Amino acid sequence: MSVVTTSTDERRMSASLFSRLRTAGGQADPFPIYGELLSRGEVIPAPWGGSVVTSFALCDQVLRSRDWLEPDKQWRGRQPPGTRWNASSSQEMSNTLAALNPPDHTRARRAAGTFDRSTVEQISRTVTATTARLLDTFSERLRDGEADFVALVGEELPVATIGGWLGLPAADWPRLRHLTHDQVFTQELLPSASQLAASDAATAELRAYFTALVRERRAHPGDDPVSRWTRTWDAMEPDRDKADEAVYFLVLFVLLAALETTSQLLTTMTLLLVERPDRWDMVAERPDSVPAFVEETLRYDPPTHVISRVAAEDRVLGGMEIRKDEMVHLMVGAAHRDPARHSDPDRFDLRRKPAHLAFSGGIHYCLGAPLARLEAQILLRHIVRRLPRLALVRRPSMAPRVAFRRLLNLDVALA
Ligand code: HEM
Image (tube, rainbow, N blue to C red; front, side, top):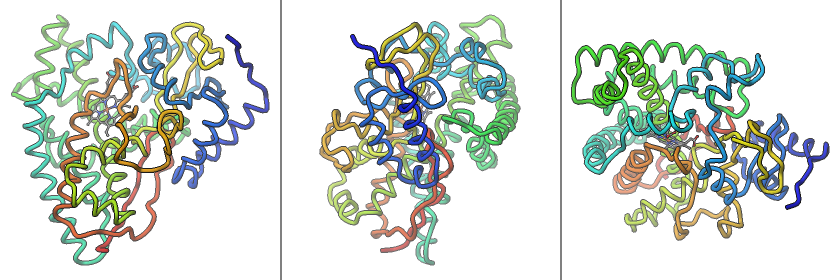
């Protein structure tokens, strides 16, 4: 196999593409930049070190292969001082599911359980009731003029769903949502020093909140997920403090994983709907197309555009030599537009065979995928059934992020 060496020119070119990706314009529409990255190769050097994987086939391969690992606690410990990996928020995240490798991951994932059919059915009743209530307020606001979908629905439905399921008091939801927005920066592609500081502060507050919650549920157990996780961990771990710590990391991660990602899915889906009246009419006439609409949204513009892994050993990937411990950034947002995987990839097309990596793949496949799909499908059905056609009032703004997309507003009015 021939192995590609990286020229200074290549690194310079990828540096220029990534700096464009970090501008407001690049974040509003990263897809032309992804097209350029794809045209430069399946694996290209990342300007800050490591590599960037652009093709669908190789992103999929890395996610499913045991040759590639999560950047875990040991890996973070081997990074030089003063990097983002030493930040307290990053250290805290290194104990959560998505930063564990087998065998620790296998154990923690088994303890987390799954959203089985009966749990999903039970949650779906709450999601339906919450959706109806949120759309009542949204409709009222629309009668008076324009309304921001993000503030009134997109951010509210996920926190009510996960907060309700975990049994968190509704009065705490706004604070938890706010802390999550800051916390996520530590999981960004290239967080700035001030973003990391905001993430560190949010992480400390979330630790205090959730360790108190775990203590309280141990003292007064009930039939809620945190009490169930405590019982599961007690059966696996004789040391009570360690069991409580494991439950804390699980509940923390579930909240973080569930909020922004799902809000972003709901908002992007609604943007794609209001942008084009023919799409709205089609879904309204054919409600059976709702699941396909949700899946195509997840392909077209997924909430998470980048997933990272590190090499377990020296490897050659797509002709590029990658040394043990080097990081590969899987550009999922680009891979979803890879013409080798999807014909006419820039077209939003409900007739495609669903194939996307929005929920990752392999052993870290998103635990909450059934819940995210449930919320999106129920919401979309309600919107087209209950609301008259809407129109976009202005282009939405994006948060300054590359990996975790976040629409800050979606201002709409009656069409
Ligand atoms: C549209 C919404 C969502 C998206 C796009 C999403 C995306 C992802 C992705 C990409 C990963 C894997 C990260 C990696 O491979 O390193 C992941 C993992 C995870 N997600 Fe989600 N997620 C969503 C909603 C949720 C919800 C609602 C929950 C909670 C109920 C959740 C809980 C988790 C957990 C616990 C993991 C860790 C799994 C593991 O490492 O074994 N997610 N998610």
